[in-house]
Amino acid sequence: MTNEEYLLAGKDVSVITVAFSIMATFMSCTVLMGIPTEIYLYGTNMAFINVGYVIGPIIASYIFLPIFFANDVSTAYEYLEKRFGKTARRLMSAMFALQRLLYTAVVLYAPALALSGVTNLSTTMSVIVIGIVCTFYSTLVNANY
Image (tube, rainbow, N blue to C red; front, side, top):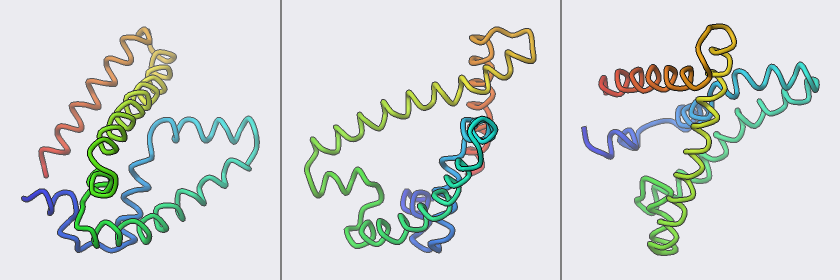
């Protein structure tokens, strides 16, 4: 399997499929645990975020994918480098890496807090256990591709 087949599905995927893929990427334990709590505490106005989860990826797929295909790039970072140079690409890559590091900490902490609440495990041990289980699962899933 080539990089183009893995990253771009051979450029032969419908917009709806790409939109659902983008939407699924943003689903995490923070969404599954946080949204019901938010609605319980503050009412159903938080439910309108679901409109963004459905419409946002579709709009992004129609706007950004044609630009990427026209410029023969497979990532936003390649596009940034072509348009603004290597410094912009490196800066945005570093900012994204930092953002993902902080996001991953929250995503691990939320279920660890719940796990430690219903078991005798400490929060630190819960984070470690959930991290190991998720890493192992991700390795199994990615090994099949």
